[in-house]
Image (cartoon, rainbow, N blue to C red):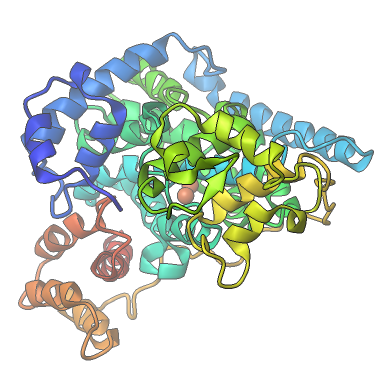
Length: 489
Ligand SMILES: [Fe+2]
Ligand SMILES: [Fe+2]
């Protein structure tokens, strides 16, 4: 994953949070590859705290269904869940009678959405990271378990961040890092909570409660992705793993009840939980991300982007509309005119089959001179724009969300009475020799000689950070952490 270069990072450290945008903060917080909980550097410590306070004040103005009385909370959540189920049934009925898709106008629209929400999805679960240091607190055990399950308990195929990365790569959507600021706000909030878990524990618990509820948009997104022949697994997985009966939504509610002070100020705690619940809604949400798509504008953006790198790469016999391609690409602000000229000169025949457009063949034919210049998403944009509704009738595929059998729950240790040394030795013994990743060897070297739970968790925790957990060493650390955690709880 991209990170902020060191020089830029040094500059960031001098800036108050008001002068940093969400994107800068996002990468700065994610850059702390080796940080351990409790040892957050000044950059993320103070700046992320300021950012969190700002976002909490933004969140305070957002209206939600969060009830004023804690005793109403279970009922309110249950009826919200029932409403989602009912609304989804209405959606299915509408679609069954021929209504068009509600979210995605075309396949590139869906791919645009995947890219837009990538900064959030690629830190999935991050807000819970800061709780790992509290592994001895039984009230927080369900939340730590939730985090471990977000990480697939160290199974590469079940790690949610890795699942999303594979989804982006599979459809050529992995160029998301240069998106506008608003794409990064929600992910930055999640990372800021990770870095400030102690101080903002009630807000974190409330944020988790809101995040783990089943939203209608998750169901519709999964349905329409499938219809557009895009693997919906990441989304269907969350329909099942976050379920309200035994899944993350139930554990989220339980943690609110368990963490409510018995002797302290319960009303104040609950007020802050509500603030965290509202915090879910800052930044760009799913429906806003979907509504921000404009096919032609997005195509023009991509072409302008290509012009920057392609201007000097065309020879002087490449002409469009009597003008050198290199001239077209060097003059900024003429992308729209270029697109018009490509049409008027027959390079693009809009509304006709793709093969009739010479420009399309230049990009996609075997040994075509521009083969590989556009990624999967960019090609799909061009394709949808050329076809111009001519061939966009939805392929109505049958779709039912089934409980995913692929996700893992926190695993069971080899023997319940195993010692710490035995559990660590068991994990080291399962690793391939020699290990293809040097970091894994270093991790196990660090664990050699560890004989207390405290030492083991101290070594492992930093490797479960949002930046580290999707790596081979992070996954190995997660597997061991999950076993140890099961052992002590
Ligand atoms: Fe997740
Ligand atoms: Fe979840």
